[in-house]
Image (cartoon, rainbow, N blue to C red; front, side):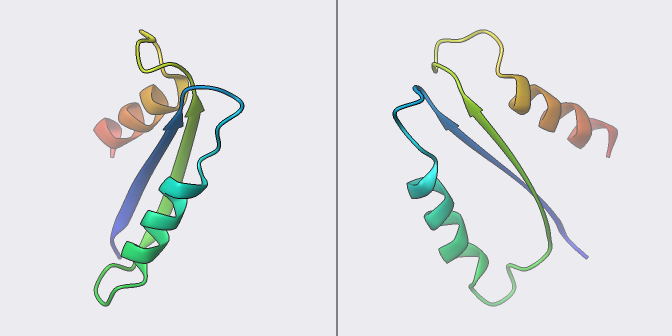
Length: 64
């Protein structure tokens, strides 16, 4: 079974991840795009040096 890592980021707490999540749901529902989904979210500026959940996701991807 495929494993799919999904990362959502917004810059402020006034924003939400809904638009990004909707785009993923649309993609996921297409034939052949199923699999086990792991979702990671951050609310940090794009200029931030650290994105904790992105870093976690990448560590897990590297470790498989």
